Image (cartoon, rainbow, N blue to C red):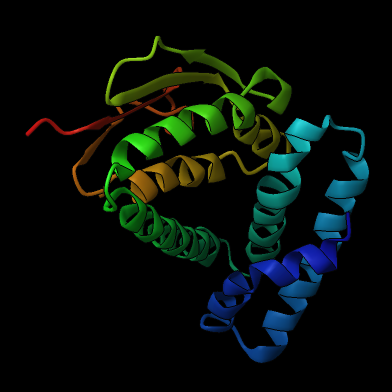
Length: 202
């Protein structure tokens, strides 16, 4: 993986960094993030393909950016990450909202989510997961082991796990005609992340 190429996809973070630091400091922070990310890639190049789908595109870039910002200002670093990740989650949520608003969109969304989740959040992707029996108009699972928690803890920034957990709320918490239910997350100190999405009864 090429760190510089990957971080070009994450320049929304760089834009927010530039709102908080001088132009020179922003370039230095970004350059440091590139170096950190490349080291993470090199140190973890033999991870399974399913795990790398999460580490290479999400976990490692976030960690590299966050740790680079922390070198300049520990107080600002978490807030910058939180703001940008919330914006990205809300943007995803708007797209999902449009999808579930089409005819039969809610049931199709649940069907697709069931298929995708069994691949994206499986053992081969570094997760331990309880998938509950299918019920009409509902999808439910519990994540009991998460690579986001595993690798962010390894990299010294476990607090970022909570932000990834919160992304679910922003993405699925405001879908028209649907209800997203969560009682705990690993990122906030829970024993698991429960995930329940169901069509609201009329």
